Length: 129
Image (tube, rainbow, N blue to C red; front, side):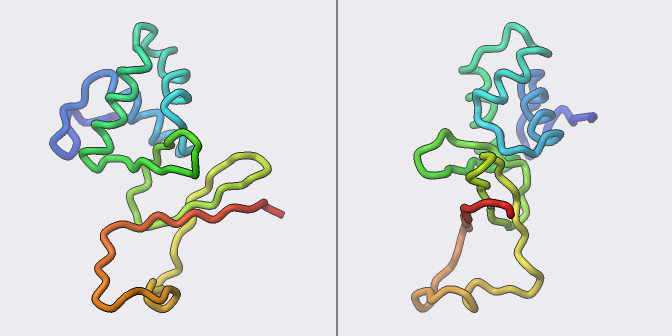
């Protein structure tokens, strides 16, 4: 995967490129530690702090999303489309779930009048049967 030298105004250093490449190729919603364990093969001298800094820079520039599940470590999602997550409690796997076309949140939720939604974070938990 060829990664541009700059994305969304963020200069892509070698470390950021490796973090971004891993997120885009795996799409597995990894934790910072999982990213660190994977990219240290390509960058043996990288530190966990550097990985955290790379992830935060990618989040701040809206290149990836940080998602949180209860009190678990933050996970990182490269899917910027509006979507939710399904957390399989048996395997721990996190799946992206798309909203069906034409679905409007106001049809599903009783929101206060004049509500303007700026971000959606929906997580479903259960098991795949």
